[in-house]
Image (tube, rainbow, N blue to C red; front, side, top):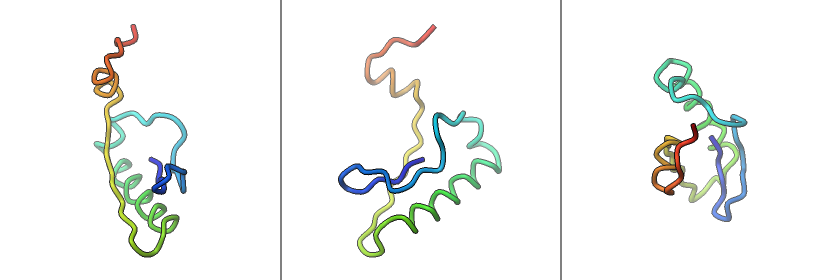
Length: 71
């Protein structure tokens, strides 16, 4: 996860690289999301902040971009 400001600058992130989707179907996944939301709240502006979250499948992103699946 990464929290960015309106100019795209990263304010905080809680992982480096890609996290396997299976993690998010476990208690660990729920904990990761909770911890990130707390970090993002503390890193962002106090007034007028909006947090938007999205979980993306890299396969779906590649498909939408028309990139062939790696062998």
